[in-house]
Length: 517
Ligand SMILES: [Zn+2]
Image (cartoon, rainbow, N blue to C red):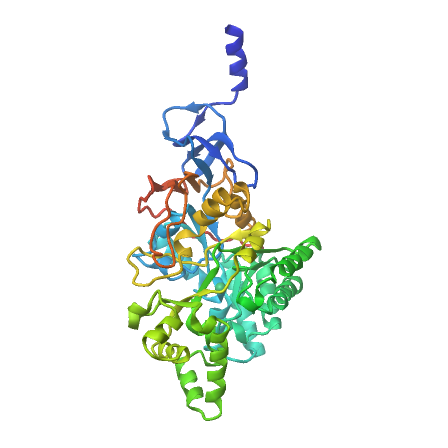
């Protein structure tokens, strides 16, 4: 008896852990793409201090996690919460906390604040529910320097100014730069302009993330452009919301994937992210209106012009044709006519006795709309998902449950959908990979030294979920619904979700990327 006790004591020779909080008895996935193991996680202040088996000193708060999964809080590489995260009503980012997401990256698709110091100060002052990192948005930077949507290359002076502001943004803690090459004014920039600015970003340790120039039939050419930018500007590149968009591009995924695999094998630093849905979402104008005329005044002038008018109409009709005559475009947000939300352009055309083209022009005349586009193929989505360099990201934003819009459900369901439906139920990818793609991998992409894993000394960003019930509830018809099965979420050691309800704590921080001298 005495001998057995001695053995036990020698096995537990380490000092007992003095923690504030212990998550006890769950299956711990540490974020590294390895299988889960039974264990505890101890937290003191804002840090994790022990993971695995250990003795507990004193009487910390204990949360029993038997039957539950304990994982690093998820990191959303692609958020559009730039404006929502500094507004009182949405700064809690509850729809993301309820997905187990503890950190989001803004500035994506080239749009957002360009004064990084000012933006981070607003977050420091007002607080946020999740941590925030920021990419310098190239489109907004270009608008600021070149005074709007200039359809021309920058002058040498303008380019120098953009580089200087990029340098400042990096010094203020941006984690890289993001472009949106289907949007104005990003679409007006040539590759050499992007290389010149990306070079500055790379020098300071940042990444280049891009909504690439074409996600449809020119997918491979667009991959080539981002790979060229990475090589010539000498920085890691990241493909945002990877997809093969539109029926004509279906089946391109295997070749596209091979292109990236080859680049990685050759030593290039290239990654991607993806949301687990077959529909995308953006503005109606970016979907069907030619870039030069996306502002109503310009579009109206072109339509009124005897020569230009028929050409522009034809191009919009062609675009609609590639989207089943408007059947694959659903209105997500249109303030002047809320009853159109949730309906397709084709349905609205029928019910209002107009052509789909006329419906589009009517909407454009009234300030445009946000839309959901059903343009992807499930097989392609699954192929991209299986790649070990594809992270999970939402492309969504912070939303309140009483939003007047009918947004894409990804803002409420991305992470539990991938983990719950694709990994646990569908077994499309292993659970540890689904967790890694939302934690360790995005942390690596961003160069975060102390988040994304459950390890001692890392920040205590943690999610505890029930594998049986961790699911997305949000649908295209009814998107404004929180995910289920999220038992506990910790942000910097503070309880942000408990018993599947947000606590309204603003425990997030603006995370400044360490400045590389
Ligand atoms: Zn985008």
